[in-house]
Amino acid sequence: MYCGKSVKLEKKIWLSSPTMHGEELIYMKEAFDTNWMSTVGANIHEIERQVAEKIGCRYAVALSNGTAALHLATRLAGEKLYGVHPVNTGTLAGHKVFCSDMTFAATINPVAYEGGEAIFIDTEYDTWNMDPEALEKAFEIYPDVKLIVIAHLYGTPGKIDEIRAIARKNGALIVEDAAESFGALYKGKQTGNFGDYNVISFNGNKVITGSSGGMFLSDVKEDADKVRKWSTQSRENAAWYQHEEIGFNYRMSNVIAGVIRGQMPYLEEHVARKKAIWERYREGFKGLPVQMNPIDFENSEPNYWLSCLIINPDAMCPMVRGDSESNFTPQHGKSCPTEILQALESINAEGRPIWKPMHMQPVYRGNAFITREGNGRAKTNAYIAGVALVQDEKLLDVGKDIFHRGLCLPSDIKMTAEEQNAIIETVRRCFD
Image (cartoon, rainbow, N blue to C red; front, side):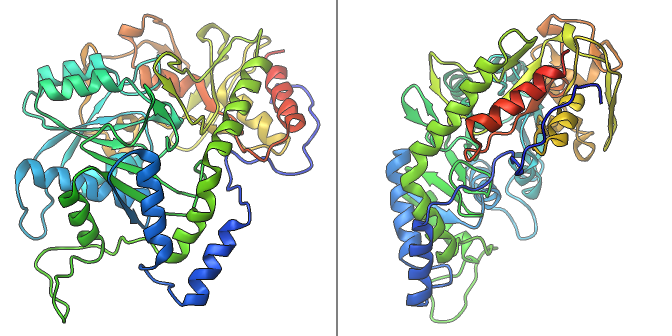
């Protein structure tokens, strides 16, 4: 490692760990004392009410995790588009789906669960989300596609109006993965409202958490009822266990719901503290050849879930990545994500690489990838030791470029300003 010496922090600074307040125990104990430890109870009903009210939708269905919510949202979209499916096949069997490329695999995998074929849409630099121009190009190539799955990376809303307009023009539905963006606003409206089917997450590292948990969000009663039924093994209204379609064990427990119920009053506080972290990083990195993860301040207010940086192309030292390892060549005045992440680890702080784009994942190597120029699999980008030679974004695989030059910084809201200053100084030393 080339970075100079830094003082090791006394306690581990995590990327984004749960921040608990005490009220969570009150509602967990209520579940215990009343013996409602299963998938029914007052906590579940209350958080469904609270979340629906906060988001501004009519119905919220509490599920075991965000992935379960995404699966049922995707399944519902497939049934709406292509009809009731036969047993042992998915609702998307044989159909293509346009998907955000730079996201966690949980956004995409439900398409495969339902037998669909994900087609990955490249990212844009303005928000690090799905590129509307690439989406337009995708519809030119695959005009029969009728479903789009979008995510809001690291809590920053994407170009929602443009994407919705393209969807309407092509008669396509949208699944909105707002798992990372609970509490974020687009033009004054909460994310989780902009798709035909919408999802949030309460995973352990999210802005508020239940340790696990997720929700399906909708304004359509029939959709909420269908998801609720599917999530409880599709049991029919009979005195015995009667099943007329395939179901899942996806309902949230009343205990987990108690944790979320105790967290809900702190959503705005957590977002404000996340925002302060992002702003301190931005101020602390002034003069360095780096940028923070971008925000469209004119149209959106993120929840600042994770603070990230991206290194300017001409300040990148040579770096290569394999499937599980990474290496770099130190250079004065330059750095790279691998060097910075190693430096953070050396002072007891956790950073992470940017999400590796889905089109680069071995499991999806056979899936199409569309840039604003067309088929991204058909072109070869000019790279030497992983550094892009061509800086014209129209010629770049944008997601690959952001992955190569970017990283996620420690963003835990329990981190003190002094601890964050030590992290900032460590990053600065990497460019000495």
